[in-house]
Image 1 (cartoon, each protein chain N blue to C red):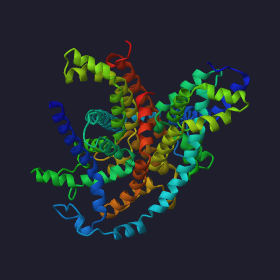
Image 2 (cartoon, rainbow over the protein chains, first blue to last red):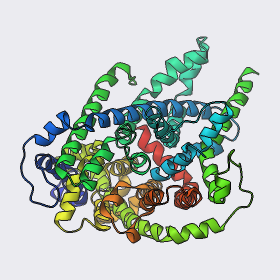
Image 3 (cartoon, rainbow over the protein chains, first blue to last red):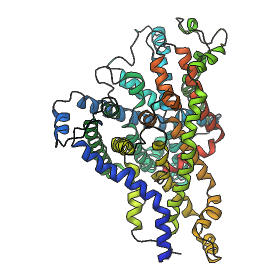
Image 4 (tube, rainbow over the protein chains, first blue to last red):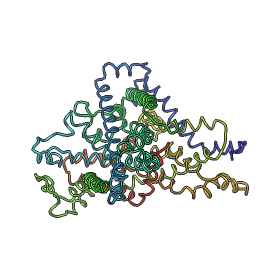
Length: 295
Length: 275
């Protein structure tokens, strides 16, 4: 039965939606307009702001030594973390989908890191990565290799942060596992009847059935990982030489440490366009590799 | 049988990788009970020779974690109420009522889910400072009362739509108002999803770092995550105390996860499978 539209239901609906609509305006739409205005000024938060046109953007794209490094660091981290995260979670989910020993217990174990505060994860892992007394370098030593300055070395800093991020992605395992359990048995059995083996079942049934879930989680995970902040703030401060200068950290530093609101506003706007463009690209290409039921 | 053999191998791999996943927790706890001499032994000791509980009393004296936890709760508890209240209200409107511009409002409200929070950080901060509220808890709590987040509205709406309309229509005919239908008839039927949302909101506030860094400056008002970050920079090499502080900060969400595991898993599955 369809809901009837009446003046009273319209009134109730808008009353019920008032908080959400206030949120839409005050937390999304107005701030978006605000960030555009702020980005066109030289505001420092103290004196009266002056309109300076596109100078902040000009500066960012030409003389700012940090911007390009920051974009590279952020993309490198986010793509690395999301792709390794998906591979890790999918593999673990496939294994947990079998009738293995103590399955419920291990599923809980893999999930725990997800509830740990990102700052806690960063600090605990920084102790594992510590160069002189850290356990990872001890393992390298046992294997006869030299010590590595994991978080201070330009080559290993981002991969080290990726590893701790992947550790915290237990939620994706849970999602993939639920997805795998939804793959209809009949389809898998049909492949078996036609003489297909495990690989055929995986390649022609499991993977196509799972692509929408993988796609959705890829997108949401990219959006959240592009906003990585805690490890840069607490461990590396963007070092070595901008290799971990993630965009949100750069924005935070410009805005709240150096009080360059204009500059930080311009960075936020660029960050927004960057994420929006990426979302469009991901959606645009998804048709090519995504399977829709009924097509 | 071949398949059974494979299952044994897989069980073994799952256990091995699972132990690796647990290792950072083990190492954190083990380090938090060591003396400074033990913690800097090379090769590292696997376990402390004596478990030094007094590390914790020392850490508590320099890192008053109960204070920080209470501060965090001061933000998180009202926020949970705000999220639950305003997201169910919005979800009810989308699931049960018909009104002009419904599609557009829905797309806008849910679409803001894709909007990265970091983008609006600066203008929102500027707005709070303009009205003199940029230093304190207000700026962190109020947003929870403004819709409670697109994901939560969406989740509630999905749940409400699975409940047959006959139930609330009967109540409406009997003269019940929409508020009564929502809170007395429908809310009890969607308690599992409300619990999930409450738990996730708690974790969100417990783990938030950027918000407190921007809006809370005085140390005695710090939240737990914020205090932990500052403690790491202030006590750079005192690893046993840092690990004790980490253990204390991590324990509440982990315990909460074990208590509410079912709801956590359900919430994750629902928001991750189909949105």
